Amino acid sequence: MRSLARRLVAVFVLAVVATLAAIVVNGSVAAFADRGKGHGEDRGQSLVKQGKAIFRDDTFGDQAFWGDALQLHKAIEGANLGGVGAGVSPKTALAVGLKVDSKRLPEDVVKALQAGKVDLDDPATTLALLKLNAVVGVKGFFDDSGQHLSSVGITCALCHSTVDNSLATGIGKRLDGWPNRDLNVGAIISLAPNLTPFTSLLGVDEATVKKVLAGWGPGRFDAELSLDGKGFRPDGATAATLIPPAYGLAGVNLHTFTGWGSIPYWNAFVANLEMHGIGNFTDPRLDDATKFPVAARAGLGHVTHSEDLITSKLPALHAYQLSLRAPKPDPSSFDAAAAERGKAVFNGPGKCASCHMPPVFTDSGWNLHTPAEICVDSFQADRSPTGMYRTTPLGGVSLHGQGGYYHDGRFKTLGDVVSHYNSCLSLGLSTGQQSDLVEYLKSL
Image (cartoon, rainbow, N blue to C red; front, side, top):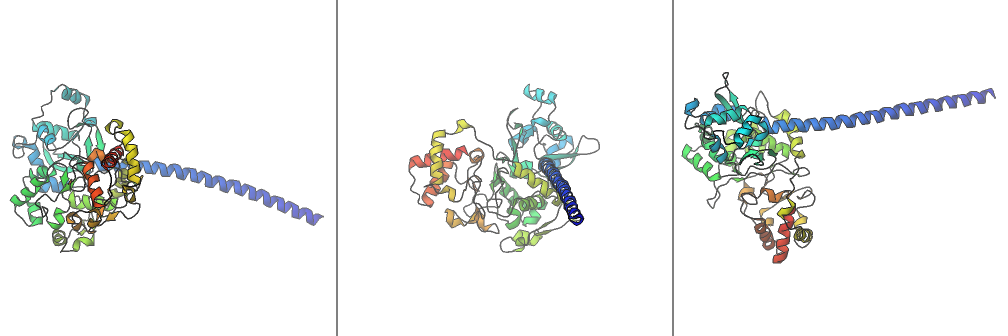
């Protein structure tokens, strides 16, 4: 009996210990999970916040190029303020597509603008706006006196943000991720007093550089020019492509019109090779002297600096970009009944959903297609390592139609795009079906 009693006591003790252990362990795990969940959410929000600041205000040290090398800040100031030339007034800046963030303007300045009491013809006003860090995507650096620009740099927001024009044309609240299709990058670069960095890289004279830049026009940029030196298409049109949206990219595999790589890859590419920031970048594909003669000669596939102002910022920048959702169009901008019919065409006889798979509206997985598949020439595809074109996400597609559709704006309207595919794929869609399909696209 004593032996049985001892065994029962032992079993009871083990049961109690096991129960307590379960409570402690499960409680600890649950508490850890709760803490981990909260910590993860906080960290994610913090990363997005950091990325927002980087996207809007970080030059990655590129003022060493835009200011120190090109001396663009001197052209902005003008001779009367210690620079060169006539200077850049706010009116001129707005005319070439630069934007002003009204949220960064003091209340008295906002009121003065509304009353028409701000001199928009004076470059000194531009300097004042730069001091307020209110010019979207442009960051001014001032000397110790605070009166003169010592340099100028650019940020991601220059091309991939605009404003809602709520205060005046070109002045309002920021719209991050929206492509600035008013921005005339070529005209802005042409203002630089020293274009030697471009003439030396491309191996051409200044007149040729300016001719190429003048061909870009509003809303276009040529990221491949510094790689292959091709300023124009075979038909004589500019080789520059439309500035793409930076919103609606969550779940999208490859970035850019020709699928150069992932979003972090392209951020590194642009920050180093296009913005001319100070960082490290590797892409041995650019060693191909046949496809990328300029890049291969300049060693652009192997950029190294002892100080890297870019790489550590890529995670936060990526997080912020993924947080930028495609904007929803105004319900009054499309026919809802027709859009509903168009949805059935999109998912059915139009075969659109075979590539533009909802809800991301690009291929789920590999999202590249040969030029022949989509019945277009291969010029731009051939300028990339892939030789292909990416299935463009369609979220907010009707809201960035300024300048046209496709990488080069060859289709002026969504109707032109639909008509092209109706012919290319022999879809046999009626005029009504095509019209309904356009309304559906406008609703996305």
